[in-house]
Length: 178
Image (cartoon, rainbow, N blue to C red; front, side, top):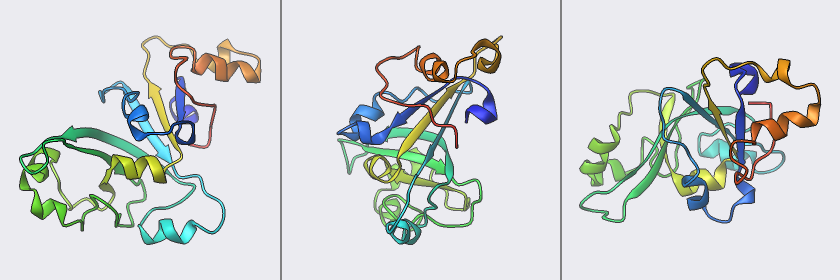
């Protein structure tokens, strides 16, 4: 994301948190100046598990939206996240995926989430499942009149400090593959 936007990023590393609600509370409100993405960083034998769910490992996904939706059938609310696979060639088969029966059981959820299974590249996911399956959430904020950090900083280890300077409570690290 840093290479793509040249804006400062914060990386939220999921394994540094015990509960998905800790990350949920840190996500900024989605607006036109923030860019969010995520990645499943995996090596080894679990690749087939992800493939069976329709997810690609070591691959970036865009985060288009996230929301908590309360309905008559679920007054506590559903926490869902809308992701986009830029390659758009696989259906997500987990909770809140296009084939999940929840979309037909709770019509109010379907309406409020603006569910539309016509777009192969975009899909909803339960936020707790997102927290468990994905390794990192990347947050990049557009800053007016921003001067690139490549010109401001000369030390490699200073970049990490600069990126997380705005919010020291974020338990993240520098990651540049997304």
